[in-house]
Image (cartoon, rainbow, N blue to C red; front, side, top):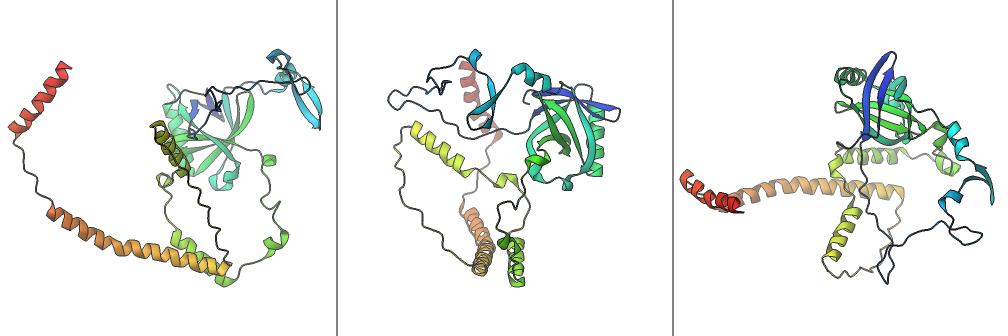
Length: 307
């Protein structure tokens, strides 16, 4: 279990539940360092003044907010500190709402809330009641000197906290869409074909089904190069996609989906037949007498002792 980022309590009414906050995700992005091509040494960055071109020491660096191009308002550290919210050890729940009422665009970063010592009973009480009622708790707390809006929901018997964006941080979806395109309505035939396509692709969400193929291929490339293999990059140009009208794209998609599912269904009996034939061809395994088996294992045990 990762170390706690924050410790405190969940507070609703007069009930408090001591908890610890731990990360719920990890980044697996492939990160590169910049190197000098001639020497292989790491490249370092320095804080250099635009005016003089000279490096500026940390004690001489101040924070400024740009109000116009090239014009800044300097804000002192003590002025910022005076405005920061007071540190708190409580997540104050303000509302319990239905999860369906919160658009996923508001969610930012997930964390787990783990019960602290001697808090298992009130923690379990909160998990069970929220799961039974289908509610999500919305509240606030101070994390890293910043007040965060959060949503807390039960997931697999534990509480998952997600920091949230405020309403003024979420942009309207249609702000850049041409009005004429938004007013264009699809035909009933197009709607029906789209429904068929969605239903044909419908299924249960399985997160293990999806992989970061780019990261996997990149790591395989790095391992091959680390092993001394010479890599020749492909320079074949990507063929441009054919432009299809909406009806043609729907028809082609339905045909392809139906062909894939039909092929999978047709291949199932063939796979079973091949498996049965392979089982018949395979020689039967002879039973090994217990004494012989123990005699075979004995040298391995002696070898481990001598090692």
